[in-house]
Image 1 (cartoon, helix red, strand yellow):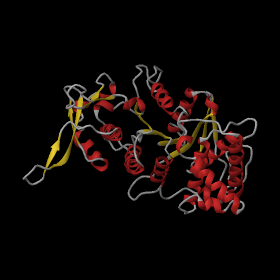
Image 2 (cartoon, helix red, strand yellow; image 1 turned 120 degrees about the vertical axis):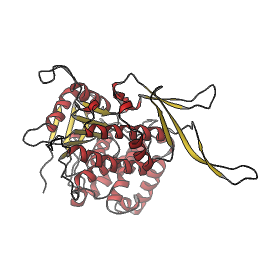
Image 3 (cartoon, one colour; image 1 turned 180 degrees about the vertical axis):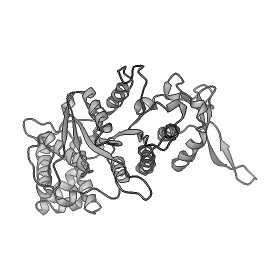
Image 4 (spheres, helix red, strand yellow; image 1 turned 120 degrees about the horizontal axis):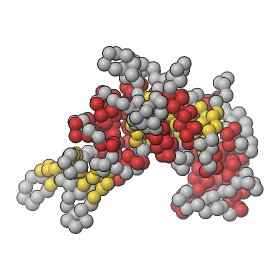
Length: 417
């Protein structure tokens, strides 16, 4: 038996930030890293900015209002603007917003080699930073074929890179800056915290896993950092993501013990905002990294509640996703494992057709169309049979209509992403 997870309810963002900072600075039980899982539209970007703002308010401890947080979020990505050279269609550049303090001391950091070291792991293009004009150009090796001559490899300059490649480059630059911060570079000596929110927008799962592993290694280094005299001088970290795979890899990488590396003290929370309001809920998920999938199931039950809930066609997408993750957890390839456990053969065939048809195409989350009455009834039947058969323990923060006990196997942390 495991103890019941703690639940903190915070009235607003400022109180939530205070809770996180208190966790990181608890004198009797200090935490080095906080991992937050939260759905999109929970307010993760706003939370990151409130955490940053809290660190530069004038207080008795900080009378000058010196910023104490280096952060990465959507605002960081907005500091980079792509220029396509619409007139000449030749000189394509990524422009840096040199007015931002994020780039303070950038010329003196000698980042090029460190950026390239990270970038080589994720992409196959090169870059050149012009520190005078605050621009970055990109090039790539291509094979040129000429009539009557052997093919030759040349560097094609000023190439256009994809949005995903652009985000990878920005992330690599940030990682390089973090390394200088951990080295104690003068530009970052007053920074005490790292706040990293969703660094993997537009990335495929392979790159997401690779970046999670590299980031976990960097955060381990931050947690075990020492000053020049050898005394502990950790950089405290808050990391948040809506990406289930990325979050789970981070949990696994930071949770396991590694040879010749200090143990990382960290907390994991599921962050939820009640009905789009200003009240936030933090639920500790230290023993249950898969809690967010169960929380999704509880939200589906709330949406399916007759009279009070509202079902949209994209809820079939969400239900199918949870069933796929359940099947995967028990070592099976697809949702047929879940369907075989449900009701009779006729129902299984009906459920399979519904989940295949209604979780694709025009029924995407980007087109929220309310279900018809027949589909609502069918959705409720599938959901009820699924929850009844697999006996999920639905979290109390959602006040779900029904609860039961979760199989012991489903409450254990994954050891692989």
